[in-house]
Length: 366
Image 1 (cartoon, rainbow, N blue to C red):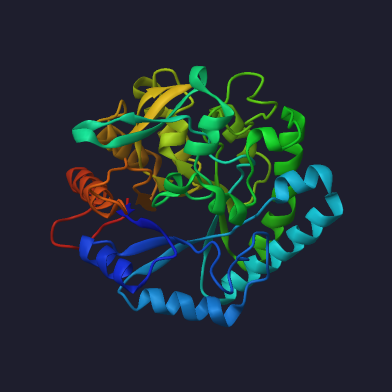
Image 2 (image 1 turned 180 degrees about the vertical axis):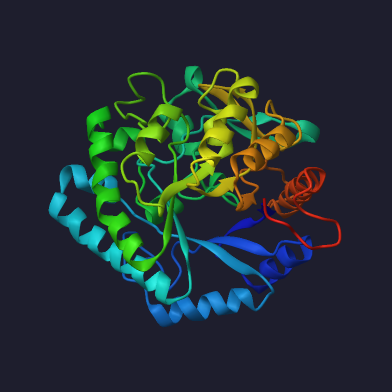
């Protein structure tokens, strides 16, 4: 295991800062960037030369591009209302997987959110910072619009209400989409997996899927079911294909949100999924609270023992990136660079304590 950093459209300065933090691997999302995704939303064809040149540019900062985002746009909802159009998008995504392989990228992450990553408020955090949170009892459409994440929630989608990011990733508010039953949710995901895994197998590219964040109540929220908002849903997802390229972006915070007592429940779940060999990257973050009522906090102050989490990944045989994610917000750290630096250093320290990363600067994967 090793620290990695997830970045959205980083410039040269930001990549230099990552290298100075001690990061050697990055996970990149280039939503809206030329040659990668459309500036007005939707799936577009990738360009092999541009993507290869981009990878080489990133790696010129002494960073390894481990994982790249495959933006699936609104294909999941489209598959329920416009199947032929969704099939065309799926074919293009399959071609993009082949392009990624040609460009030297071996792992792609994607998100099966249909209606954004639902949040309802910013809660007071330590020292006057703010923690993003979800409380089902406090849910309103206005709170959803103001506080939810869209696509990747970094560095600050919430600052603008998320509207531009939502456009780019094809996600919508729950009240703007038709009802999505449990069956419809699985039909949409199975439609996507069916088309992408075969392409991944041909190209030798791993696909890392992010589960639904947050877990919704039984029966859904606003008629929308989050079928991958439970551990059983994640098990069912992995069972959709035996391919070793069909796996997870295991968001530790999201999985913690599935339990009323995540401090007790999460550790054996980490070990279980790590042992499948199908965790391809980890969002290494912590929460306070649990199912239907939680806040995203700094890694050292949540309900999950993060050192025990590292040990569970070790026992399961995981040997990939740990990416800090969704740190709190503050006007003192507008881009959340210092907060992310703290989370990276904390994670590096845990890996050193676990004997995974040695202080001499040489890492040993376990």
